[in-house]
Amino acid sequence: MIKNFTCEFPYSMLNMTMEGDYQTCSWSKVYPKYHNSSPNNFFNSSLLKNIRSDMANGIFSSDVQDMCRFCIKLENSNETSPRIPFIKPPEEELTHINLNQIGNQCNLQCAGCGPERSSRYGPLIDNWNYNIDEFKDIKKIGFIGGEALLMKSVKDVLFNLDAEFQLITNATVFPKWLYKLTKKKIKFIVSIDGVGQLDDYIRQGSNFTKKHL
Image (cartoon, rainbow, N blue to C red; front, side, top):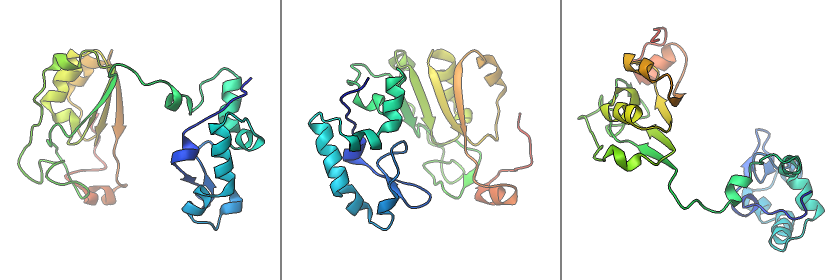
């Protein structure tokens, strides 16, 4: 059973629910009592100051147990709670990297993008100047910016590295070479800005009714 509990969230962040109530994170107790308070007033309330003090001094107070009961219950059941990744000692090796905007090649001209994110706005940009072997020990690789499935550099990485991949895509292109990667661990995050004509308006060049698979 847990007898000592500390977490970085009460020291560094707040969460606000849809009802406008505060909590220290998405899993902590909600405090409707502070509904009409400002974020600073709740963060600097005597309640949170006492909880932070208790955590810093190793005191497993009733306030700490009440606020953090979700994580405490999980850990008492030998499960991993949301706080665990934040209190683990840092890794001594790089295991995860997000490759942001290694190019701007894209087939759409979305309202929220500009020349650095879409070649439909300006000249084609290719920022890839790495040796693929430099990433051979990375366990997770993410791609953000442009349309990943159109970029040769992304294709080369997918075919030549054995990692878990995460791609943000507009889901309007599905190249046939993807079928050769069915044994790879690839997670697709699909961006959708609306439904029907609204989507087509925001994402110029898109056709919401068209099937791409």
